[in-house]
Image (cartoon, rainbow, N blue to C red; front, top):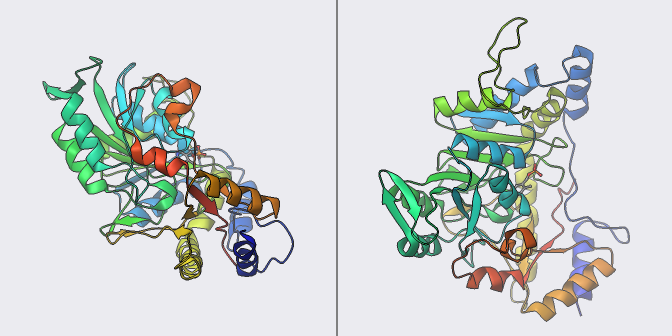
Length: 380
Ligand SMILES: *Cc1c(COP(=O)(O)O)cnc(C)c1O
């Protein structure tokens, strides 16, 4: 039934027979050179020139005042929530349609996830759903937000820009402002994605990024926190480096810190990758345009950026007619060694998050049954 789509994807990747991956990393620049530099320098761990350079590059790319290099996207989000003041049993509002790391990072920070629905078009947190949840359950007392049903503090909100498609983040930021909730964007998937001309991850107190092997650019494993707040930036660096007071030889630490700073080995690869970011983004956009024309008029809908958004087209996304069509598509493509993947199972359906409070999740449930990612690698 989907033979023609399979043939088209193979043609697009110039791969007549072999396995077509969902998203392979592309190393076309100075990766090996910088990696050898770090080994020659012996500064392989988290003190090193590339770590600092990576931070400068991330600040410049996102337009944030500060960027802090972190070991990965999950620890970056956990640390950002700790920095935002999450205390044990505070609630953190997020979306149920996300990679499990979002909810896990909330839990690692001591928080309890609460799920509100996504928009059908962006697949990211819905400002309308957030507003109706807050209208029904939230109450601001002494400059802090509380959940009238659970009695707990609602300390933060973590929207996620699904597959690099920006959600309506300006409206979410305005709601967080009104309700005195810290906004921390999980921008792990949206490096190079903008909303109304502003880079994702820069609309709230902090934004976090991932450089895992499957992301738009990668350094094996890596992450970053970006912020415009100088105090938060300094605290992020302090906490991520065991909260050590600088001293030439003594061990003095003034908080329970973390060992979360990105090693120089990884930062070297990250710098080389960021140097090629615009080439990679152009290449991915060209692929998305090819897909968009191909799927036009077919009963498979290709997802495009909204009018206010510029997406990085990290993972190209299609929406099938229903669950049956989705399953047939997944079976046939993967059976033909063309890798495709369904969107995540909703977080509130996983055993560890089944007890969490959730709003009306109509759109998330609808998307869960229909959304599939198709091959999206850089094409040399
Ligand atoms: C990849 C990803 C993360 C986690 O990043 P890691 O670097 O793999 O820890 C977090 N949130 C989302 C939405 C992601 O896609």
